Image (tube, rainbow, N blue to C red):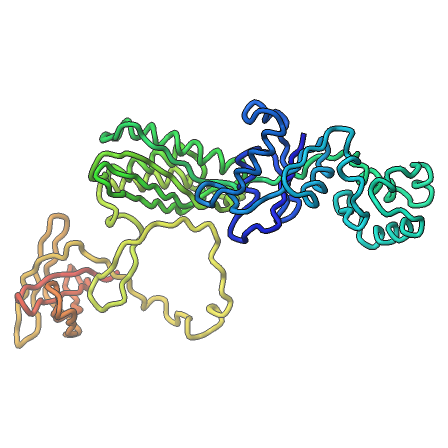
Length: 455
């Protein structure tokens, strides 16, 4: 049994499909204001088929807040979906078409209202058939259905047979089911507030299983999770997990979420939990036969999360140089796995601006962290002797060559502003051997330091 709902005055803000889903999960959206429902078996919930139709009609009059359509809709029930569509479109109120009695309700309809798209007959061909039937004096569904099938087949072809079955309400087809929009979210209301992490982990596992099942059913993944917890003190605790690699493993999500909650615990007991994710296409990576395997992205993300819990989220990641002249100034950014090979630039190798003319003159600089506290002997304003000791290294010797000083200052408005003089000095380190170091003096304190050496 099929039910058709036709709402000619439906507001553009309302969805007829969403309204129909409250009565049956199997619906076909024929037009924006017409849907067909498969109501077979719904009698257990709503009683007889006619009671179901009346329930649909009464519910459509309710307001939007009550789940209605705020309009008077036409409802028709029939054993054939196409017969139900024609009856609901052109008959007001509730119509019940008994099996085998389709022409009793539809027989007086003019042929001009026959919806040829239901049997996949194009408009040009259907117009030719209707013109032929007009010349024959056929005006209604009943007249067309009474014609002999053999004559219709010989003169109008297979399209005429299909249209005749449509007029008689005897077509046989399956509904073109409308797929409900995918939902990649899950939530739960708790009977009692939870204040401990262990019982809360079971709630997270249940919700993540549902979200990942939805992702797997659509062959999708996610790189973003939004967890919202309603707390007992009427506040909301939100955590936003951004993943560098699209994944859909609920076990990995659960471990990452628990580590994040341990670092950022809610301020009160949890009353409800909802998890929402943004679906993306999974990343497919083809490894080479002779390329060493890199760490699995999910395992790498778990390792980074554990390290972040131990040393702090701001102390883990990739170093990034800051746009400042402050010595050794850098920040940490979140590590992102780059699977794309860097593009090769041909211009860089041919442009003389980027060529190293004398590779032997290039020096590398090794920073000492922390810099070595030094004692520097000054003569006529120039360093002549340097002595510095640390736990792992020591620097001492006579200055045989130097360059400088270079004054560097900045960030005067901050408490950690810097103001210093830098020197590059060459120290005697043995028989005819020299070592090149960078030393500097803080002008505020007057202390000397050895910052590093050149290789």
